[in-house]
Amino acid sequence: MNWCKLGLGLVLAVSLCTGCGNGMQKVAKQEMEKYNMNSYRKGNQRQLTSGTTLNTSLLRSLKAECAERGIRLTHETYAEGLDGNISYSYFINGDARHFIIVHVFPSEQDRIREMTEIYGSGDGQKGLHAAAAASQASLIRTRDNAALVYASTAQKNSQYREQMKTIFDRLLMRMQDRAAQ
Image (cartoon, rainbow, N blue to C red; front, side, top):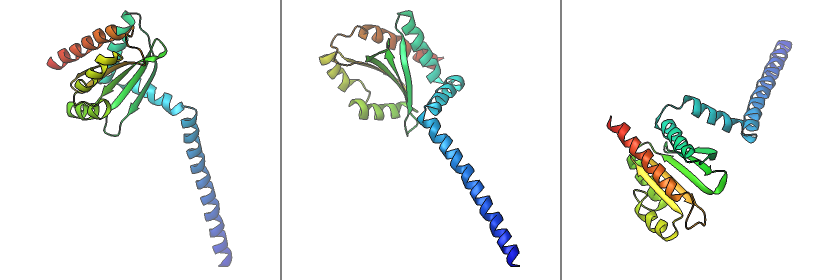
C-alpha cells in the first residue's frame, strides 16, 4: 500500500513538473515575442489583412492622397483605446517633426467626448482652432466617428499644412458621400 501511494505521488509530482515547465515555456515565449516586437508586427499584419472596415478604407485613401502629392507616410503605428477607439499615427516623409494621427471612435458621441479630453473642445475644433491660429502648428478635421489631426512641432508655417488641410477635407467629404449612399 505504501509503495502504491509513493508511486502515485511520484507520478503526480512528475506530471506537475512537466505541466508547469510547459506553461512557463509558453509564458516565456510570449514575453520574448513582446520584447522583440513580434506581437506588434503580427498585430499590424493581422489588422492590415483582415481590416475591411472604415479604418482600412480611410487609411488607404489617406495614403493614396498623400502619395499623389509626393508625401510619404512612414513609421505607421496604431494604438487601441480601452473604449474601442483606435488611433493610427504616421510621420510625414520620415520626419518626426511632422505627423498625422487618425482617430476612429465607436461613435460620434465617443469622438466628441474623447476629443474634448485630448484637445480641449467637444468637436475637436473650437479650442484647437484658437491654438492653431496662434501657432499654425496643428490642424484638426472631424466627421462622424473619425478625426484627422496634423501637427508640426515648433513650426508656425509648416510646409505640409495646406496640403494636409486639402487632403483631410477631401477624405472626410468622401466619407460623408459613402455614408449617404
